[in-house]
Length: 119
Length: 119
Image 1: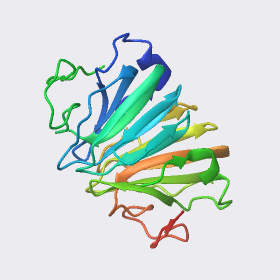
Image 2: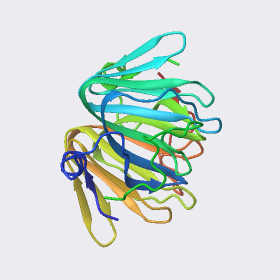
Image 3: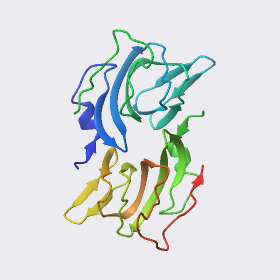
């Protein structure tokens, strides 16, 4: 039961594509992540996923269009929808999704993180 | 499946203490709300509630202490914990909580909003 300061938490880790858990509620988790470069195309069959951009510019590529997110904008990727986050420059993002969600969804790659750190 | 710009959404409503639904995922809702003044003391028996301050300074009074939140800070009020949001000046906040959550929890008052607008 402590408050979370997003800026302080982002300052605690340098790595990209490795979500950190900063809150948990109602079976859902709040995660912070730094993106840079291109992620793998993937989908989550059972989970909707919210991306809120805290800093930078994030492109979420869908198969039929791109969604461009600036600071203060969020997008919910519905379950089953293939997507690829792309960050030309470093992006700080907040993710809200079920505790069960794997970062690479239905794909296993070198970017898959099985066990998330809590910070 | 449209992105949401928080600033644009906050500009769409002037009223205080009346959460607006701006997103829905995994049985949870993302709500935006403007606070000003003191809310009623209440609790949610079955639902944890996250408050993220987007603008201003929010005090969440608990029975044993106060939690002060500035922009970019969030706090999760666990289920069953009595709390009272207080905003000396206007606050813009984002709330994550189950779709079933009533704003005044176990209390009915003139601030209770049964049916939330979606914007």
